[in-house]
Structures are given as structure tokens and as C-alpha cells.
Image 1 (cartoon, one colour):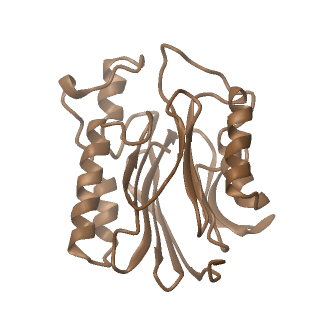
Image 2 (cartoon, one colour; image 1 turned 60 degrees about the vertical axis):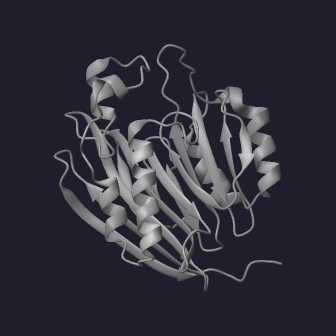
Length: 258
């Protein structure tokens, strides 16, 4: 998953808004979002190669997302699946601070990553490549394949579009999918240098990535309203960048514990 924008307590109707794209090689087998038969509380897509996920939520209000940290000059190699962290957080119900401390203790087991997660009470961000770890409070955030709120062009532009959506106070989710669907590449002068070469930097600078072997496989919008109803929508895309399916779920979350 390579682009996420999020708003916490910034909308009159929604206390949480997440819009995210998952970018991956087209030959990596994947299941679209569903409630998992072996973990019925978990709603997520599934990576069939390693068994984890890039983004998921639970009926109790937990959510988690992971992105790769892209630096081919100083590569780290995984002994464990980064997507397995999403699965572990969603399945085991571990308290937020205990989970965050376990990430700090185990960070040498994983290639470079950013991890964000929360429940109905707390949210946090963790990086194992120097981006730190911290709690997340009210505000608008953006994340791609560097640290939280690193001003890469697509992160900056997506956050600005999300802010306009928030200011309009609309409940229409299509503009959120629209901000994820933008295929414009950044100017060469604005590109980061992460060691993948200029052609890849250009391709990856778009919010919706469209390459011959690699690209955006799914776009997801997740909202939690102030009455506690969750709304999860996932659009899947084929190797030509065409929409091939949509999954939509609504469910009520339990009352937060005071």
C-alpha cells in the first residue's frame, strides 16, 4: 500500500476518514476485501503469498495499515512479513501501547516500513527507518513510502484535496476515490531519489500508479461516523488500470469504553 490520507476528528459527520491506495506487482496473488472465515471479526484484503494484509479493520473498531519505506540505497531485508503486522494487530486484540513497544523491540525483523494503527481510543504511527513513533491526534495526515507527512508531491496534493472535501462538509465518498485516482506524474524536479531510477520515480509519483508490471491494485475508503457506524468500500483494478470490482460493507461499532 503506497498512499494514504487520513482525517481524525475534522468532519461534522465523521470522526475518522481514511482513503488509501494499495500498489503492488500484478502477479502477486491477492484476495479482495472480505470478512475472513478464519477471523470473522477482521475485514481486509489478503495477500495470498504471505498471508497478511496492507489495510484492514475489525468489527470492534480496530484498524491498521502498513506501507513499505522505499530506499534502495540502504535496503533492509525482512525475515518476517510486513503485512503480517496488520494481521497480528487486527487479530490479537493487544493493547495499543504494548503493541507499539513490541514493534520497537522487533523492528530489525522487518524491511523498511511505516505502520499506523488505532482503536476507538488511541492511534499511533511507527517507523523502523528513523521516522520515529508517536501518537496520532486530531488533524489531517498523509503517508506514502517515506515517513508520515513527508511532502512528496502526491502526498501534498492528496492532503489538499482531502482538506477541500472536509471543508465542503459533504458525505459523498466519490471525491475521495477521485483524489486516489489521479494519474498525473510529478515534474522531474520534484521527484525524490530513492534509488529505483528515474523511470520508476516518475511512475511512482502518481497517486494512481499504472505500469506494465506494477501498479495500483485497490483503492479503499473507510469512514466512521459520529454515531459509530463504519463504512468500508474497496475498488479493485486490473493490470490495465480498469476497475474490475467493488466491495462495500457497513456495520455498527460497539460503544467506546470511557
